[in-house]
Length: 391
Image (cartoon, rainbow, N blue to C red):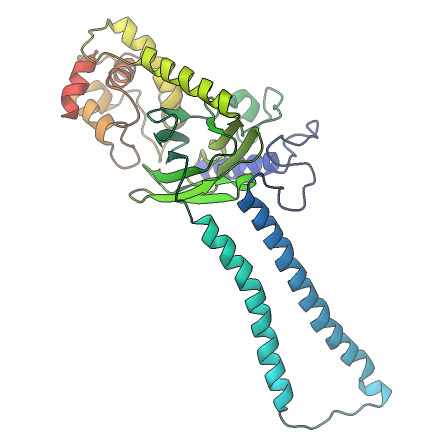
């Protein structure tokens, strides 16, 4: 019951943030995101988003015309032909002209609505001839991005919410810190793409169903474990744009934002060069033997970035959902079993084989085996052991 209440609280907080009403004092829109008192769709920055906006308006006009016409005739007939004015009900049989009219007119209306809608849907699915292809992997509760084709190929990183817990507060309690403008819609690593280039997004997930949603681009694509789906967008305006996972993917669903930074070609090249240099600098040698203090220090940062959402900073986990690491038989048992668990996953525990390096896995295992009340006999794991377990 506590988990349900907590989930409801998080969903409510997200809804407020998306409506621009996260706090009474925060009466301002979010650049690249929801606007205050926004009643219509957000104006798009891609051709597809513009088509969706126009299509939505066109459909609404048709529906309103039908509504006014049908109810206008109905109320006119009721008022002008009521019994109190002396009118008597007529007895008549079917009319061929009426039969033809109410068959042909709705058919023409449906065709008028279907043609532009079909044209837009077909365009949305045309992911051919993309300049850059990026794989977006949904995981509880963050996104992993891998640039797999085009300029920037080989770049990969995780994108995690950076809204501090002090701004969120516990369920039923007031946050201890004033909420920022981008509350629940800010991340540590944005997806960066160049303006005016066709970007193909390949979506998948490694645990439950997620969805990569960016309304301002006209994109909403499910990310399903074991399946690969794709979508595309071509941004025409430089800026930072914000969206969220569109599926109710678990208790931290409210903390799974999507941020895309659209930059000029020159700035994108600079970002690619800098990102590749950072990746090269951070690349780990799995044959290096590290001290236990080095591994614990590295493991703490890995744990905070990837594990704390489920297992909590205290290592106590979430009763009924995610097991505690503090006092865990796996953490305090043979290290081979814990290595195998992190590499291959089990039940709600995802596989970290493709997300973390050998050194990161060794470090976080060493951290958990020496933290809280844990005093494992085999208290250190070297990267070479993880490398060997992968084979």
